Amino acid sequence: MAEFICLYGKDSASIVIKQPKRSPLFSRMIVLVFAMVCGLYICSVCLKQFSFQTSQLVPSPITTRIHYPKPQTFNRSECGHNPVRFFAILSMQRSGSGWFETLLNSHDNVSSNGEIFSVLDRRRNVSCIVETLDRVYNLDWFTSASKNECSAAIGFKWMLNQGLLDNHEEIVDYFNRRGVSAIFLFRRNPLRRMVSLLANAYDRYAKLLNGTHKSHVHSPEEADALSRYKPVINSTSLIHDLQETESLAAKALECFNTTRHMVVFYEDLITNTTRLEQVQEFLNIPVKNLSSRQVKIHRGDLSVHIKNWEDINKTLSGTEYEKFLRADY
Image (cartoon, rainbow, N blue to C red; front, side):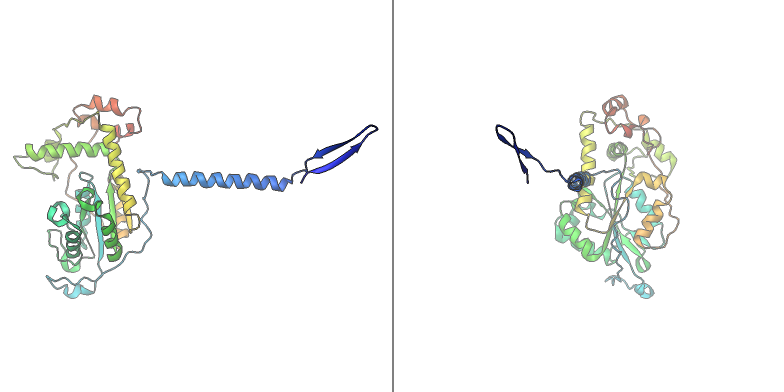
């Protein structure tokens, strides 16, 4: 409250209004509150931003659940008391999921049953999806990868465009209810994925290996034969296409953020020898050395694999995607 001071002179009296001195503590409190509000705002903005390259590298902390399936098609006999973990590899085509799956299947106790929802009838509606999932996790799904009786972890790979995101609410509910752990597998360099997509689509019709189409190969000679084809990439829509790929991955992570999950990047599996160990630890299975017979098709610098390299280099130079031009994997 202001102080009123009366001053009397010979001829008149005057009133001076004097503002009270503010306490230093009060001023400091104002500054502190302002700083806290600004800090909370900045944190909220940062949390809303999605960083595709670094997000979700650490597995979610939810404890893995164990199961004791009782299949209808065979007897687990002495393995009936051995617990089984459920998992699903969630990925995009040509992201290394086939190679990653062969690594997991080289483990004595892991059965990953391939891309089962590539068949439309199995994902025609939610009921079909649930029925298929039940068969897989009840050990009643037979493929060349099935370990059957003594499987310690059972799963498959599921592409994002195979009904996964269209029915994500029901699938998330199923995963949480049945204790299914999700392993997201993405590529840090979507430009290389684009090269692989276009080359694989071409080979479906060209059948470069003695009239046979192969999505994956097991010898350097076969890899060299397939890599001779150099696709032309649409430079006009390139940046938009790269953004769409990143947005799709971000949407998948957002949809499945309540599940027990981890994110793995293809490039990290190649350069980081401990990443496969972390995957096995995530699945709660004994850690072993895993191997695959598959051979990488497009090796070396991207400039030798893209026919219109100059256009692509010009389009991406100076943008946030320029780094994809130089990446090794």
